[in-house]
Image (cartoon, rainbow, N blue to C red; front, side):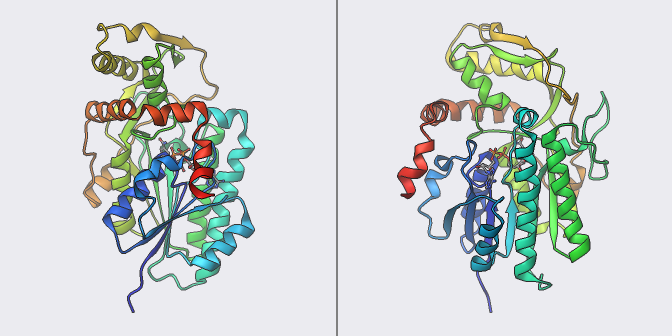
Length: 351
Ligand code: NAD
C-alpha cells in the first residue's frame, strides 16, 4: 500500500537546511517533512517563517548528541529518509573549541546512524541516509588541479577533520551493515539566511555599517562559491536520482581569490548604497592569517553535471546581487541576529 514518505532533515533551521526544507516541502507536498534542530546560535526559526504553518511540516527541537532522545524519536516516527545537515559549521570556532565539533559532527552523526539502523534492521527498501558534507575534507589544493569524488581525504582543520570522520562512519555503516547512503561534498555556499559570521554576509553587514573588512593573510586564498539554492537543487536531485553508496562533489565552477571577491562585493555594494565608486574598498584591512589555512579549494563537478544533469542556475554576480538584495530587504533578520533577539523567537513561537 502507498504510504507517505517521512523525511527527516537535521539542522533545518540553519542556513542550508532551511533552503533544503523549503525546496522539498514546496516540491513534494505528499512528503511529511520533519525538521530536527537544537537551535544553537546558528539555528534560527525565522528562516522558515513562511512555511511553519504547512500541514505536512513539523519542527522538533532536539539535540543529535542526545542518544536516548534520538533513539526514542526514531522509534516513534520511523523516518524513511534522513537528510543530515546538523553540524557545527564554522572553521574559526573549531579552532577554539574542537571538542564541540567532535561531539556534534561525529558522535551526533553516529547517533543518527545507529537509530536509523535499529529501526529498519535489514529492511532497507525505499530508505536512505543522506549525509551533507563539505569539500574541506579533501584538504588543500595548490595553484592547479581540482577535487573530485576520487580525491583522498586530508582534512586540515578540526572542522574538516570532524566532517571527514562523519563521512567515513556513514560509508562504513554502508559497507558493514548495508545501510543505504549517499554523501555529497559541496564547496562554499552563500546566499540568503547565512549567519553573519561567514565571509559574504559579514562583509555585507560591515559595508552597510562602514566597519573594517578583515581579509586573512594576503587575500590570495581561493574558494569555489555556490549559491545556496543551487545547492538545495543539487540535494533534491541526488536524493531522488543519486546512486546508493556513492559520493557526489558539488561546486559552482566558480573560483575566486578572497581579495577579488571582496573587491567585487564592494563594487556591487557601492552601487546598491549609492556611494561613490571605490568607497567600500577603503574598508579592506588585512589581518593575521588563520592557522592551518587551506590555500585553495576547487571542485570538478563533472559527475553530477553529466550523470544527473545538474548545473548552477545563476552566475556569481547574479547570486551576489540576489544575496545583497535579500540582506537589504531583511535588515530586521540581520539586526535580530546581531542583537541576539532571535534567541527569543523560539520561546515566543513554541511556548
Ligand atoms: P549552519 O551552522 O548555518 O546550520 C547548522 C544547523 O545545525 C543550525 O540550525 C544548528 O542549530 C543545528 N545544529 C548544530 N548542532 C546541533 C545539534 N547538536 N543537534 C541538532 N541540531 C544542531 O550550517 P550550514 O552552513 O547551513 O551547513 C549545514 C551543513 O552543510 C553542515 O553539515 C555543513 O558541514 C555542510 N556544508 C556547509 C557548507 C557551507 O558553505 N556553509 C558547504 C558544504 C557543506
